[in-house]
Image (tube, rainbow, N blue to C red; front, side, top):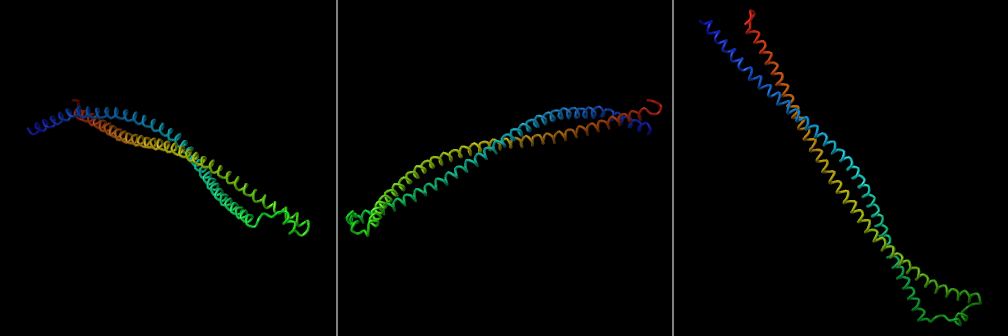
Length: 252
């Protein structure tokens, strides 16, 4: 009686295991198939993201060269603007010096005119009477004429130099403004390129992170699928052994 009960329990257990095998196998095969499909999808996404990332890197390389070129142009433009500004400062200082010199010459000429007005213009008779010999007479007359010509000539030279310096200052002022505008234009172009470059770099980083995330998901999915395959192989092996054990040495 007890033997019959044990055999019944063993038979029921074998039936339960047998009925559970198809369900576990189906579940594992479904998991494996789903994992393979997900692996294929993730691999395609990784390939597409890698392609986009490489394209972004090529664009970044091109833009980096353009930004470097724009930076070099900006440095050159700023250097030219600084040099012209220094020339403009020198021209302004020269104008001030010439104006001061002109004022001094005019003051001296004014003093000379006042002195001549108060003392009287030396005439030929006074020069002859005060001269000590003919040679002294010639030297005195020549000296008076040289002083008069020198004063007038010096005034003309200083006045012309001042006019030329003012013209140079006007030209340098226009050139300075123009070069500053050019430097500002180059700076705006460089900033625009730098902005585009920063956007591309951010996009490349985002693509790299997305590809890394999908690569991690692919690794997990592949590991899960391989674990399911090992579990399925183990289940099939246990099923085969159980089938052999239930058959017994003399057959079923």
